[in-house]
Image (tube, rainbow, N blue to C red; front, side, top):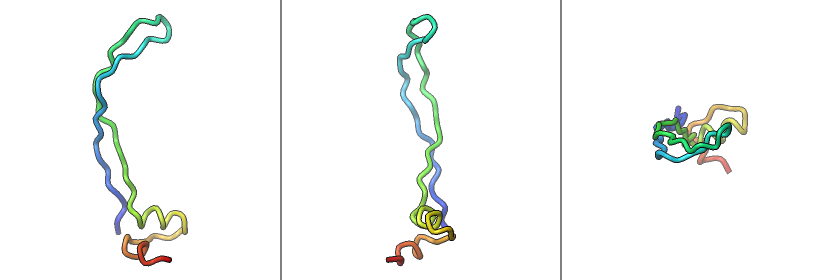
Length: 60
């Protein structure tokens, strides 16, 4: 059964400020997790059942 897709997302390096001193700080680029749920997972969690993508598409 389909669950979804987990991907790595990259953020760009950016300039931020230290809230205590107000000094500019460079925040380095880093990876974070991204998750895109499948249609069956989204529909199934709303209905309280486990559905495949094909079953979710067949629903009215």
